Length: 103
Image (cartoon, rainbow, N blue to C red; front, side, top):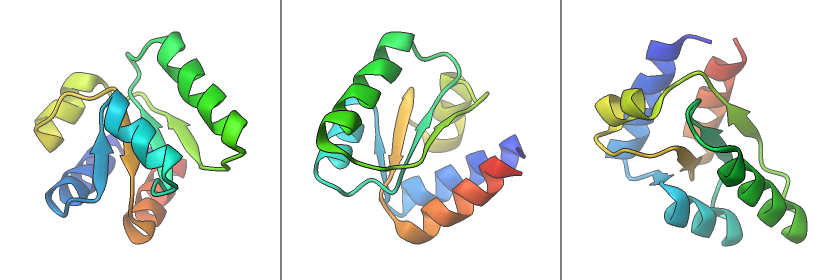
């Protein structure tokens, strides 16, 4: 994974208004079917991850989920918002970010 490229794409998606950042907005995006993928920062709690997993299992959503080595502070510097979980709400941004995360 090329961390700088992922952070750069997240910054672009944020400026384009295609991210739901933080617990409440990301969970809303998942529940409304807007989220194309979920990204968790490395310093998020296990409880937060379990909460999202449980919510997606209940509704039978199949959204790609990534547990990265990116920290909340790094997300803050690239996107301007402190968030441990990010929902990408755009198919094209999601495809590019997923391809960068899988490298």
